[in-house]
Amino acid sequence: MVPELRQSLLSHKTIAVYTQPSDYVFVSSSGRPLNPDLLRKVLQSALKTVGVKFNISRADGLHLLRHTSGSVVYRRSGGDLKTTQERLGHSSSRITMGTYVHLLKDHQRGAAEALSTAIFAPLTAPGKEQVN
Image (cartoon, rainbow, N blue to C red; front, side, top):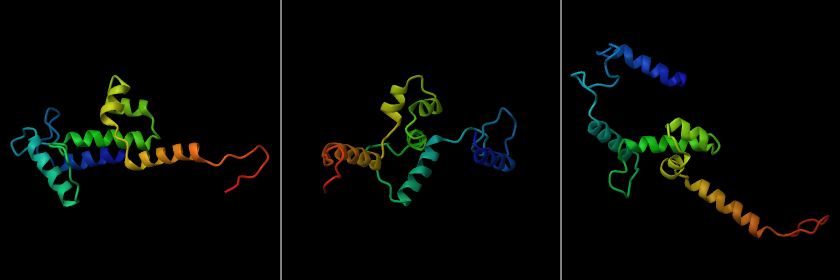
């Protein structure tokens, strides 16, 4: 657990009413787990506020955070699929890559540019300067 998350959870604990080891971390006023539908509505409202729209029904649910997490870990780890797989707890990297890691547009653009450079780069003879 990163220090920032640990501190955030400790701060939450200081204001929590339910603090027994058997209590849930995020609860309703009755001590029961928060209703995921309420959390989903808050997330959807936040996404709407910042102008994020989805073309697929229910794509803006809480599971979106897991997909985002997988994509961010993959990208920030330099494309380390094994690290991403372990972080998400998958038994197979095929699940991780096929379902949870979504390549971003700039990755797609970079891949297209790299391929274009490799195919269309001017050829140079050995010992000669490249002609533009």
